[in-house]
Amino acid sequence: GAGVSQSPSNKVTEKGKDVELRCDPISGHTALYWYRQSLGQGLEFLIYFQGNSAPDKSGLPSDRFSAERTGGSVSTLTIQRTQQEDSAVYLCASSLFQDQPQHFGDGTRLSIL
Amino acid sequence: AQSVTQLGSHVSVSEGALVLLRCNYSSSVPPYLFWYVQYPNQGLQLLLKYTSAATLVKGINGFEAEFKKSETSFHLTKPSAHMSDAAEYFCAVSPPSASKIIFGSGTRLSIRP
Image (cartoon, rainbow over all chains, first blue to last red; front, side, top):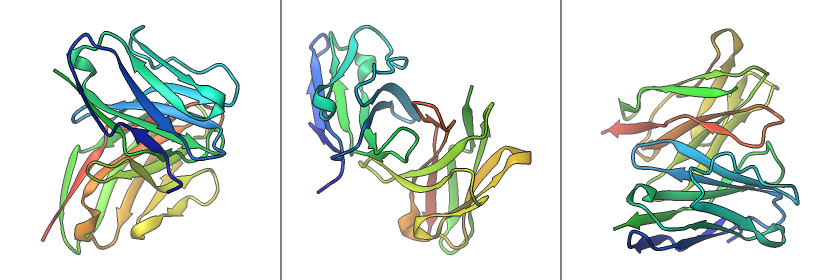
């Protein structure tokens, strides 16, 4: 389909390991967002990419979290030295331009043992 | 700064009854406002958005919301609930020039047969 695609859909890993989560936005969308949704919580903004501008990293909870967006398309969210509190659903969204409605992927459910 | 408050983490209504999900916002500038719905194990879908045009906004699946500046509210309503409406609903606010949307903590809607 033409929606936002995230992989993997589920990831289980041991505490201390590094993980990479991938997001393929809708083709042509210039804006890309990462959010974290913890059990019973709302969405927590993590990072935002807009075209070739420097990303807004103001929501990243620690320096263990990083993200990149290659070629203005695919994005990877990396969590180093995972902790149990990192367990959550990580959602990616894209929009045609900033302040346009966001289209969400189905998320990656991350479980840290 | 912008913020959004959703009153009631869980709302239960009977099938066929009125649905009312409450959202109040805080914004220093005229905001954009959104309602998103999340079905189990899926990402978020846009229900409707307000971007300073008509104050009564109609969305998908029979939902609508009214922007009331005097009350700083953007409550979501549907005249007659259907079983398929059971989901998590998120209100969100964004200034037109902002790089990110601020989401509320969500309201889980349950429908009783």
